[in-house]
Every structure is written in structure tokens, then in C-alpha cells.
Picture 1: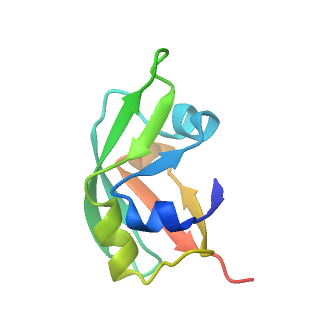
Picture 2: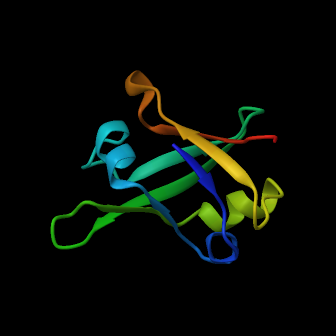
Amino acid sequence: MAKCLSAHDIKSSSLYLESAFASKALVKNRKRHLLVNAEGDCWPCTVRWSGKTNKDCYITRGWKDFCTQNGFKEGSIIQLGVDKDLSLFINVMEVEI
């Protein structure tokens, strides 16, 4: 999943994930994950499912620290990915244009 970060995404303590990506890539009952940057450094985070149909998904606790420590800013484009065998890890890389 690719996402262009808004000012809200950077300042907020959570990041909304597209439901199509989240439902295919993440294990719904798992709340704790690790955000992994391009260098392989990890930050613990929590994934929260919400909404009437439990399809809305957010990366919470840990997202803001991850953004700050990786220098993300408004307009940064990130690519998120999850290896199905290692679904605990959410890989986040900044895409250079």
C-alpha cells in the first residue's frame, strides 16, 4: 500500500490504513505489531480495528514516534508491506520520487 502523508498523518498518533490492504495483510486478532524501517530498525505499535463492520484499521501507539524518528513530513510518500509469514512486522519505506 502506498500513501502520501498529510499533515494530519504526521501530527496524529494514528495512521489510517486502507481496508483492502489491512484485511489482506494483517491478522485481525493481533493487536501488537512492529513497524520496520528500511534499515531494519523496529518500533512497537498497536493496530486498532473499528467501525460498524470492523473494517476500519489504524496504526496507533508508536506511529507518531516512528514518523518523528524517521524524518517523515507532510508530502512524504511511504510504501507499507507485510510478509504473510512474518505478519507481526509492518515494513514502512519512504519512496523517493
